[in-house]
Length: 445
Image 1 (tube, rainbow, N blue to C red):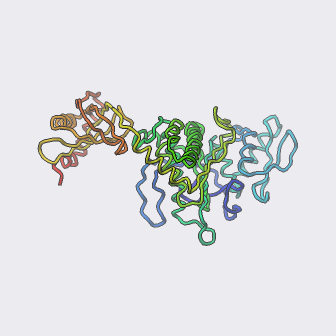
Image 2 (image 1 turned 90 degrees about the vertical axis):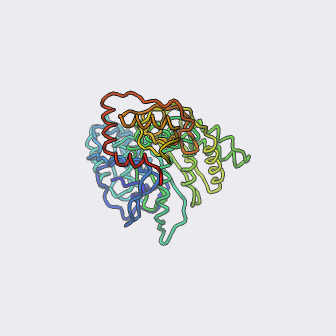
Image 3 (image 1 turned 180 degrees about the vertical axis):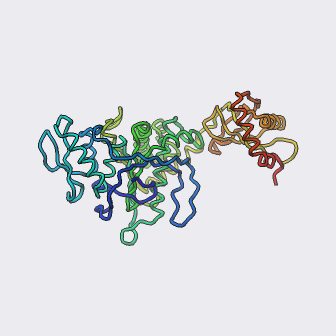
């Protein structure tokens, strides 16, 4: 089954792999979607689990091997060729014999070239069964591509080997964390173009990554993510354009010393989140590269190369990437909004005067929570609205300096009428957290 993004799993031979695949056991048939769980990688053995930044979706099982009746033999052949299998003979125009990567030893597969071949279903069933029990690391990826038609993103990091060719645990953590950040940057860019997103769009972007399938190499230097064509293709396309635009902007900066190319690259999906992900990918390595391959069943999307070239970054690119990250963070303007939110926390230093309110955003802004400082009258209005189970509406500017988590210049604070079901839910939340709310309303220590 597919392992968590941080754990060692397997590596495809013939595509930047490390080793010959020895020591791998049989591949079990189930495939499990991996939830993208955040910028904090999994815990070391024996250590307490860290608190992830991204929401972790449930694991879901997809039982059984792909249905032979639904497998296109041409797609199977394309996937075998992509993952290093070699065609070694067969009846031309009828079927081909495919052998595993590397030495070519092991179980070979007979794959018909089309469904017009009389024994097509039987041969496909035998080939799929052989792949499910194959010790070749690439067999897992071929079956995944058949079970869930997916675009594939691969990361490689050139890192100095440790004793006996091993890789330190932190190196594996860094690769998993950088991969998650890069996928999140692509998902954010699908929601809209910005140089710096902060907390904006983060929740829907995280949700769009819940179906990603992931497999890692045992050496800790490579990782593959499978983005299902539905709904993941927009993310893959955005990453394709953004990575090439980032590469061109870095080249321009290194040649001229100027940063203007990064401003234009925002339109292609480059952002602070993407440049920070590339910094995390390259830092501590001798170089890194990212490659993308389209699902054979769907073909390449419009405007993209059929076989995109890998995009490479080196330690010499880090100053340009860090400079772009800082430029995006300071250059993104604050956003005028008129949002509706439920009061979840109130605090002020005394019984009178202005105070700070934390709102759970219900509409008007693409962030889950904001903090806002209100004058005495507005603060009292917010408190009364909360006590009767009503949200409030407030106008202001969503500040970029805090990651778009703070509203400034607040005005026009008014309660908002909601339907009975929503009001009952808000009142229930108040009663369940009454002690906390009374404490939060009191003066600060």
